[in-house]
Length: 332
Image (cartoon, rainbow, N blue to C red; front, top):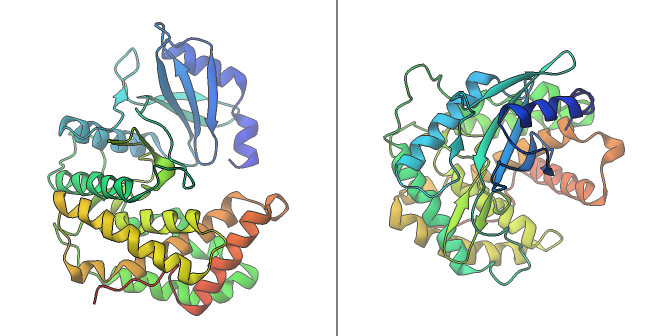
């Protein structure tokens, strides 16, 4: 979280949020990268998830549109943590901080446990379930219609991170020609019902819990209108990068082949993307590099970058310069 926002999010604001949602004073902080996330407890001591968002990150209308889609997916029978409305029936409540505003929403807690890339469950069975879950979301999102009064979520290219002149500065500005080439190539792709719609956009293994049989996806904060193939590229990118963070390209390619085989078996059971669309995977792997490079420049000041972040940034920069994706993908 940016330091200025951190200074504005006081204990007084958090206490007021807990009080308005009729939660106990107890909480556990789970994260604070783009949103503040807490495990909190209702009056029966049942755990819930509280998310607090600064107004500089999302507007109230943007948050309400995300939560409208979550409620739709739950009504379709997709097993994801649903939204819990406030005592007065709102999905989003506003709170005034020190010269700024915060928005709070409450969710069910996902069932299952976090997945570890070095754990026994990080295998083909999980990859298959992962793909099946995303395919099911894509199948139902084709018929999503916003509730009256709900604004439309942003298009993928309206992402703040693609305000490239802001995040690619100094020596990084030399990358802009190659970065813009990737973005323009994606913009040229056709937007069709069976390949483009409202998607999660960030279903890596840190954004779901798994009980050995079922995946429950959460953190829909980055949901936008994007190509379905992006929701395949993101799991592939993060699974490969996490499993072989310091690995060779050959190690990554071998893992990617195994991952995609199982993942697409699951995906195809719920939704079908043509081979033509799947051949666009490298474009979206490159887009994730572009986005992440901007994220690090936005969120992590140079003096706070540890060895892992520096290694990641170095690899991303080299890939952008060489115009290659994190892995080689072939469907021939």
